[in-house]
Image 1 (cartoon, rainbow, N blue to C red):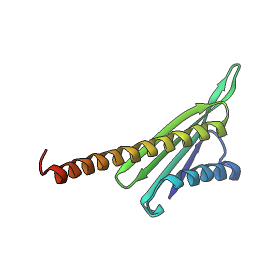
Image 2: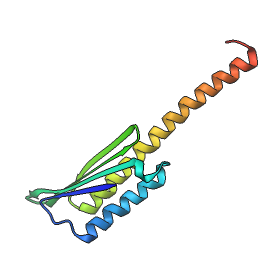
Image 3: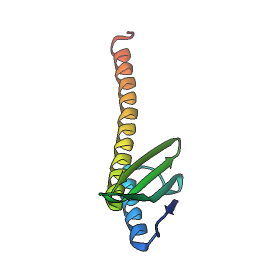
Image 4: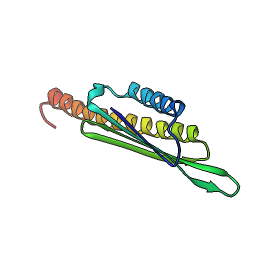
Length: 120
């Protein structure tokens, strides 16, 4: 389920499609049913800078059963901010997965050592 909120700008079909595309890319790294995943996206036009022009903020939060991932970025281009947010969420998901696998591998090594020698 994806909730999209836009502040100070109109949520057009092109922006909605871009957000859905970024979320779809993230689902490649999530190995669970989509019903168990909640996605909250927020985009905002924060104001104007004197020399840089408009400033956009993109925020993405993903709740997977037991885990929560969140990223936020500000940029002069909305699509660039969305790309950075997507990359950060993917990095967090990969880190969490490797952390869990390291824990399993350590336990397996310890079990193998116990079975091999009978004790530590």
